[in-house]
Length: 278
Image (cartoon, rainbow, N blue to C red; front, side):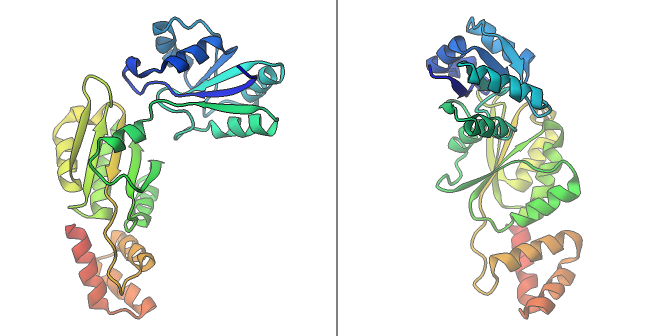
């Protein structure tokens, strides 16, 4: 093994999804940099991996990165792991990757599980083009604004969400994307209580509201892309219209956009009504 950083994917739940190559790498490196050392110990103990472990996560200061770089500069090998799945997917590891590359050393991917890709593969939604959004903003105003900006995106949308916010998030998606937009709840993937449910956003919101168990565990939400906007309404105008409709009555939103674009108010209003029913 050459000196450098080894980005190692670990299981998202089922420990049997660990690759033999990943086990070999974790045994042979000099240090394992883990997002949560206590969480990673279960995996390491399961595979009898005795490599020293250090913390490297969102709140790590420069000393952690300097320690890793010093090891590599001395001819060492460091493995980077997250709590679950592929590192750098919705975590800050890219800073370390850049630092190692900028120091002139190699960064080596060790592929494996990724919750977003696993959910997408079993979703039943279009997979030819997708947009990974990760976690939405925690505050409702910023979240609603972000969702409104995505209302006319035609690619399948992939989100991570915290269990205590999943119901509120689905309800916000109903407002931003419409009652009938198809979506998927993928929860606790590869684990005992795995849930993969495809339905309309309205039905999914009702399902989660009626079953407290669906508000627990690791969650991926996927939303089907929007259909094309009418020819006389550009995607930019459609996005603006959707955003204004979150704050204003539909007729008022349509009137404001009509004043600024010259489009007919009734056409814009009808578009808003149709979008809400989808």
